[in-house]
Image 1: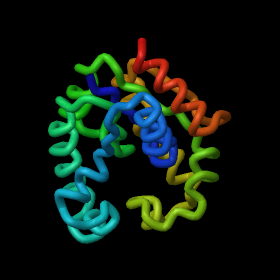
Image 2: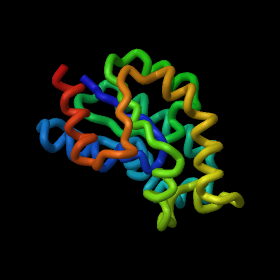
Image 3: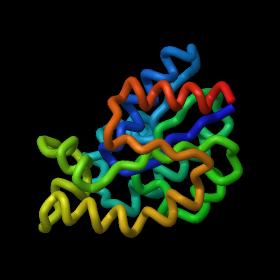
Image 4: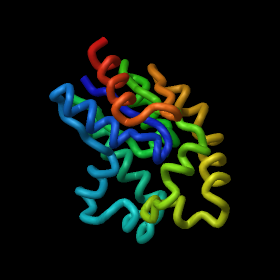
Length: 168
């Protein structure tokens, strides 16, 4: 069984997903890490050199590759932008949306220097994140079978909720 984590950059998918997977004794994968491994460079380098479209194509390949895996998979924040990706996610019974407000995302990402899109944005971080979230919110809602609000809880508490969903 695969349990997918979706949500915005900074929502805690990787941190809480790794923690939950470790405590459950299951594997953890991250689509961004799969893309980076296959391309031999960081996501930021890939994005900067070959552009967002190439990254999204590679992300789609990574998602398809991980669809038959066992364990917890953290996806990139924009994975829901692609219709085929949404179909793969929707076919799963366990897609957990880590819901996070733009204000909390801004605080978490304040010192970030390697998030594609965020570092190249010409508008403020809060405005950038608000616009992205407005665009993606209905798509996250469409694929999610579960939601966890991460605004007022730490990664350990998020991981505990993920574990509960895994065991259900």
